[in-house]
Length: 143
Image 1 (cartoon, rainbow, N blue to C red):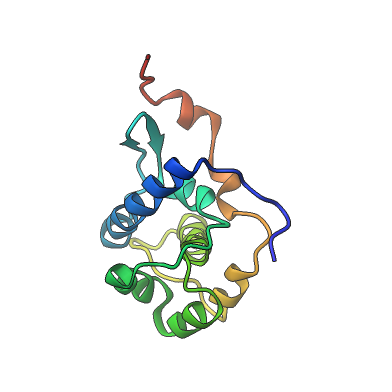
Image 2: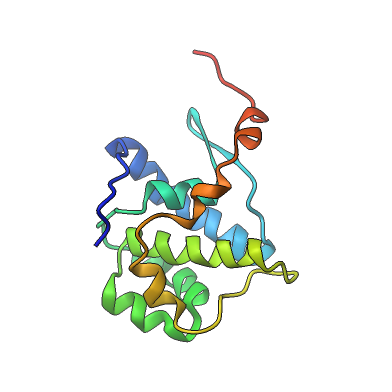
């Protein structure tokens, strides 16, 4: 599987898991990819996907409908091959990447057997989306 490990402190991973469905719901409903405050950190859906990339924690069944909506008819592939937050992050990152490369008015999935390809991706497609000017525009909290 993925040879590159993105280290995430366990506390932040738990926060990301809890925040992920909220960000995903907002994206699916409106295409909103804005940065939001998560405790003392600023995150976007792309960054949360990157942080959860290798997370083997099982995805909560209570929010499975969001992944079902993201994957469409290929939901069974995600469920069979992964069913984890890491797998969810991978398919959402691929979905977002498609949306940003092919703007079409609202978020919709790529064509073809994209879920299987997303689950076996080596690196987050969101790497290129973490732009320096986006980060510099965020308010900084001083401690």
